[in-house]
Image (cartoon, rainbow, N blue to C red; front, top):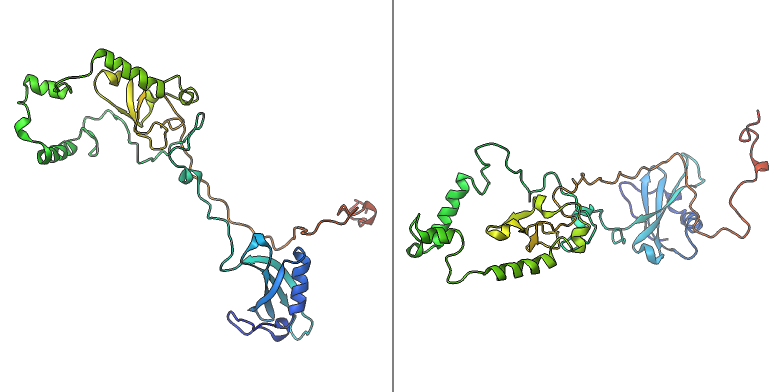
Length: 304
């Protein structure tokens, strides 16, 4: 027998010596040939010792067969308490449960898939609430405007900035202060090309619950293209960072569904008042495992 290890007290001598009894119990509970060497004996309490045996089952690497034995006070007969399979320090365990919303990665969404949006999604904020004063983090707030002007002062060459109110200033604001701009033909050609990739006729848009025109992740663009296109800002959408038609759509629509709080699995409940039969060996031929009605007590048959 190997040297016994202790938890908080010295193991009872008779219980610690009952290695053969513990091995027999482990072999009866396990499949043939999976109970290995005796690892240790741990004192669980007064006259209560748990014997640990190596598990040779390839699917339970690092696990231990734990057989607890005990004896009554002043009694020399050691009896079996329970037999279980427990993980060791280097046991192969299932990974920690992770909600699906944390497992999702960009590119996982396909046609017909719905991506619920959390009500407190940090990527979205409330739209216009009817108040005159915008929120401090709004792009039209005074604080943001002052910050932008301060940053522009560091990177803008003031010598080329047109005078406010001049034709050049208006042209720059409209995005036309360039040597050449896109022609009407070039504009329609680009729009047809973009609509073919991210338009209403694509499989993704056909299966979407709503179109991009009502999505909170749509970034509006200026000019005439803004009447039909916008930029997708949903990192989980297949069109993230792409120019999409307002009639396009995907399952990542911000208002398609509200994601409920991910439920955590309930902790396991150990029922110590009953046992569940879990045979590891195949039943002998002709043995159905049921008890003949004739063998049942009269009380179980409803007889008085």
